Image 1 (cartoon, rainbow, N blue to C red):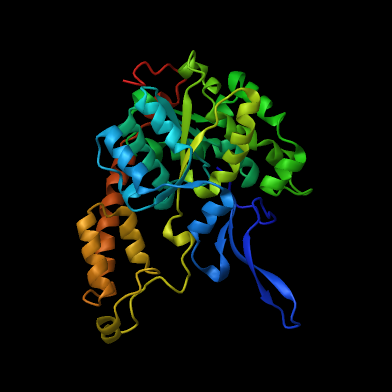
Image 2: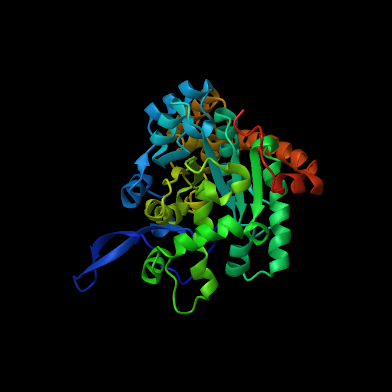
Length: 391
């Protein structure tokens, strides 16, 4: 999925407020920029997700939907649902309505392979996608956009393909069910029905529109302009005839970070015009390091005495943010929040608990990844039917 483009000023425009210049004139101040290439907030501050929902026009994922997921799946909601990590959606209600009627759906998510391995922030959507696959017992397609990284990161075709296979090992290590999962690289898979859908999408999006959405300039090569349909069409089941032949009306649910929303607003706009259903989305916040001020790594006070007296500012505390992502025990998290906020716990004590939680998570993933062979990667990427994909 897309990476940084330093020239881009993308649609939708950044939210802004006004202030007075030294000459007394009103000037706009950028508050935050959230695009597929760039995530930043005013003066390094926090992303305002409420404003982002209003700006993008998506819906908040409220407690009633979380309760409904629990009722339909008979599973305790994932920690990322309970803690608001996945906080917004587009038509997730429609997916649940269809599922309650007995209609299945499929999942689609992706990764732009630009490094040897995934870090914790990269793993967040895949950890959640595994939960969705297990809870709803539905098939999953994972797109590795090696073509996109070749164009944006100036990697060779061969290096992009190598990194895609390395990243596939990290994804397989998340524990996806091979009987319900198809992983594909664009360089290997694009063609046939997939390419036909790309052309259908491309014909519906004008050059002016794609410039407005993605901020392309006259200096960008044409490969970048042509890429958005590639990321759009895995939303349509007809792109995968070996999986979904005869199921062209199957709905698609896309778990992703909210910076990917522009791609799928474009897709949702085009879909009815070419006879397909709009994909639904369930969207996450960003991993803490992306939006917390560099001077606010800890919300604890700068001396033990002050910490005991005033307690920690939990809103800016990175150790607490990490625990909110990865500590599954709700009661323990609440106790840490309460005692740290009141000054009964010191920053070092909270950090030690974070280290324990992350060490366990990383070591478990490291062991799982070490067990993934090239033959396993080939099996997940084989163009084959999935006979048990809905069982």
